[in-house]
Length: 109
Image (cartoon, rainbow, N blue to C red; front, side, top):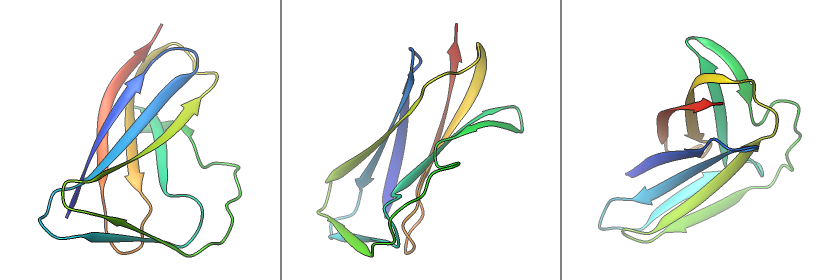
């Protein structure tokens, strides 16, 4: 089992950091079908305002990442031109053999 935490630095740009931790006492393998390892979304209520992967193309590469017990891996994304306001940030691991998500709120001045 993996657990995720999401932190947001609401500067210009807004930087999202998604940390995935293996919380078990056994190694965990994460299998990915392409170069996109995690995706990030910013919403206002139920309306999606920004998605990191939108408009991007990713190399079709099969990859397996192994995490030892208590080991972490981190994924980052940046939103270059956000409008001022309050948002809910959501991060999701894109591995095809496990799920891991995290949310937090942030504001842009």
